[in-house]
Amino acid sequence: MFQLKQTILPLGGFVLLQEKRKSMPVQIPDDLPAGHVLRVEEISVIAEHIALAQDIRPLRIAIVNLMPRKIVAETQLLRLLSHSPLQVTVTLVRFVSHTSKNTPVEYLARFYKDFDAIASEKFDGVIITGAPVETIEFDEVTYWSELQSVMAWSRSHAYSTMHICWGAQAGLYYHYGIEKHPLPEKMFGVFAHTVTAPTHPLMRGFDETFLAPHSRHTGVSREAIMVSDKLTLLAESSHAGVYAVASQDGRQVFITGHPEYDRETLGDEYRRDCGKGLTVSVPVNYFPGDNPEKMPAVTWRAHAQLLFTNWLNDIYAQTPFDLQELKPPE
Image (cartoon, rainbow, N blue to C red; front, top):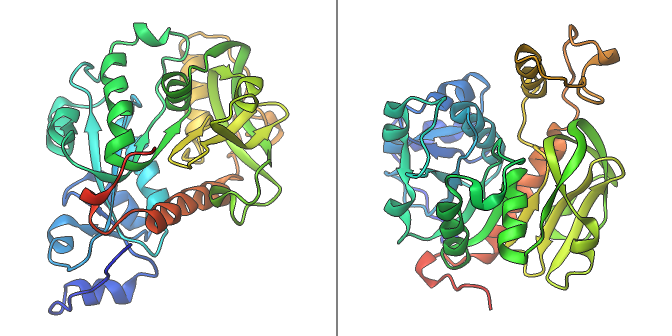
């Protein structure tokens, strides 16, 4: 897909950065706070003004960030998008129909674009995140109409769309009419999963079993997915149920868990719910000895990284160099 040419810049430009990194970076706005966090972790990022001086067409990824703690969520996703030999430029997208209570308006205005502002553009991939609205009917979510517009738009304006957690439930419902259903109790913890389609591009290199976090009050029917001739079940858990699903053409991807979560994300959610006086169980297989005073070990990072790298690699192999030539699925 790439017609890759790299321009040699004076000292302090691209060459110096290339010597210091082992993978191509994620391009982000110059002052995005996530950039500082990622640089401290020695993760490759490149400032927008430097990236614009390169003769290269990076993968274009739009992130529709529906999570309440947007800065945390965007940092987690950028981390997973960065460990690849492919350069990625990210556009953060917000909805005008929803006012965030946890992210300053000034921050959103500076680093995010309204969907209408990018609706005429084409992208290699789109990520639609989860949102804490699982117990609300889809058509009662304040931004449901705008999200439907995004999902319809993604079919013709992006090669592949990855839907995460509630985003996966919303996507399965919108594209294939598969309903979500309430769970007896919150699916909360780190669960073992089995790969069911080992030859699928997204599952390349996966162990037969792997761990992944979940945090949700609803689920989707395995039977509804298995009877569909348009979907392929990629991975599932005996306890957490359906985990990874893809459309037959591979252009719609649905991940019901949260592979992007950091070490302490489930713990923060647990303490938040306890602080609200809610009855909540300790996350399964998370704290050592189920003791919330102990630091959890990260047991899902390799799987999460491989999933995102496989996704980017598949996009790279399929999208044309000129995105205007991108065709909608038949």
